[in-house]
Image (tube, rainbow, N blue to C red; front, side):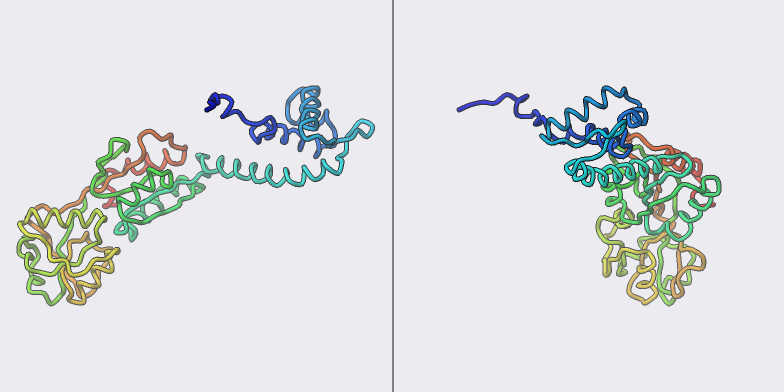
Length: 314
């Protein structure tokens, strides 16, 4: 049995991509300029260094790429073939670099921001409107999803920041509580409790519940509040949107624990204040604690943190 050293196993071939890439950039510069000296000036490297690089590339490929024409150069057939393959790659790389630089620019960058479905009606649009009044060039990629799903996407790098509830328990995340949001018992307009303004949650113990599906933060909070009230909710329907749950309640298919609706609410429903137990959820802003943040992400993060205690009131 023979053993090969790590260095020999891992070493790239002499004409590997890692070796060729910088030489191809310099070759393309000469080919485009059709002049070695002008290309060297554009690349800000000495002319002899550039000449040696192109000569070495020719030796490695085993073909001439350039021929001299007076003070300039022109491409050989093989040189034209190589340039045709290299130019699209370099153009795409330049576009990618420009896109990346644009995303981190403090004046025209991009923020990937996640938030709960129930915040999409007024809270988040108002937040974005006020932020863009001072930072109109910053763009947003918005994601609405279940809290745990957004946290997974944020850890994977797909999101920069997200607002979730309940507070995530993860030492790798920076978590800042923003606001408390009251939850109401939502009942059909003709329900036996509909004429009340306040109710103890235990009074709904025998009712069918419509809830968010498993994995949603609001479902975890609903289960916890019902347990505190001394019962397990009889879940009749599960959904993914608060408006859908309100529609199910309006149709007489059950009751639900939900935050207050946007303007007016859903016809056919009544929202009752829960006096016992204390029915609130805490909204928190989270981001990866060990990941450097771009300028636009820091700007928006600090803006949101400045709304602590006023997130839902604005």
